[in-house]
Length: 308
Image (cartoon, rainbow, N blue to C red; front, side, top):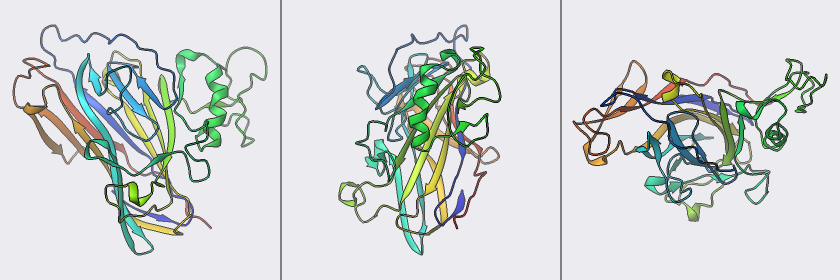
């Protein structure tokens, strides 16, 4: 998708779904993977529905080692080795491209923002869950996320995030603030393209002053949304290097391993703006009737804010 980025701010929101067509062998029932408890910080394992997806605060999905294992799995079977994105554009006429594509050894983003670097202890993954309950400690922790650029529901309209139970009824009311909880679990982080060129795979590309605020969310559902994970990206031109960035193309990148990777085939559906991976026949891991893994742009850019 092609977008213009001008002056100091640009916001793109793209929602991607990792959707498996459930058509399993046997009784067709997937058993929930045993829940593993990982406190958010540098990395986190999201296990809200039929998926088990590790991620880190640098924007890498799947290719994150936690407790001796990595990769996105469905019913304990791998479907995604690594996920991320590629993007390119023109900064006042200068061409550039960068990416989070760990399997291709491309990592052009560091955790944190240009103003708040990765060494700050606030730079981490933030997790809020519906099961936390109203005004849980995670709601208070979200203050640090807001300081880094996270969204929140401003119930009292004062522009300041302050999750207080104003009437002491131990229940959230619409006139009270709350985190940007989407679905049943939301995981948020921010990272910027301030990686030194000498440390990049393509060392002739300089930082462009871009920050990405990433929100991963899912639903605890036995229905179709139980086979989806959503990723929302918000892109910001900080204006540190260029007042104007335009002709920006943003694309999803993934290195899928749908069970046995040697039987994987790929295709695209232009009517859905989606790419998918499927097996050429029976799979050594998923069996005789393996699923399909689809990545879809559910929503393109919906907000554009030019700077003054």
